[in-house]
Length: 284
Image (tube, rainbow, N blue to C red; front, side, top):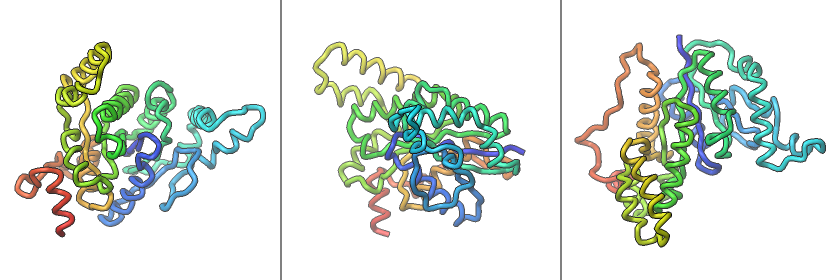
């Protein structure tokens, strides 16, 4: 029997631990078992039980206080993750061998772990050897994505993780509940983006011909291959959490023995725009 895992990734402050907490509560409400493993050696607090905690193996503070290493926060975290990669037997012992496990791995926020360092790729390969079906869940703060240039940066970060890890990946815009009404309307076009419209938005800002050509090339590549799209995520709305979970389950075929089907949106109930969706929540 396969086991299942979400690799919860994203920049620092994107809401990874909050996402894990909400997902645990949501799954408990629908009578579904989900466990969380903390892989952030610099984490300080969790409001949910942990199946395993990397801080039992190594902590950033201990590395930084070691006079023979003299690492700062970022170097210390990279050292911790490389040490972790050499001690996957600790993780195997912590996970056990229970069939049909569904585990959320709450990962660190250092972006270099998902761009060029091999640690997370090694973790994915190890989990697959342990018969896990792994889905990457890449979170980006929606407040960061409301401007075209920041959106392109977010897309490239998500794309880097997709290329490095080579696993199914669901990209999510978090903290939708914190956006203003105007921002919610503005961000709707970025959920399933037309990159050529992004180019038009930035045309009047870019003065350099070289950067215009580079931006056009990047946006054209992403658009031509439909590489990245986002799901909106509002942690205060159970339906929003459920839609995200359904997409992830489909990506790893969780519950396929129960004839699980690809999530479909009800066209009769679906609001015409994202703004109308949020207004419906307010009205209720």
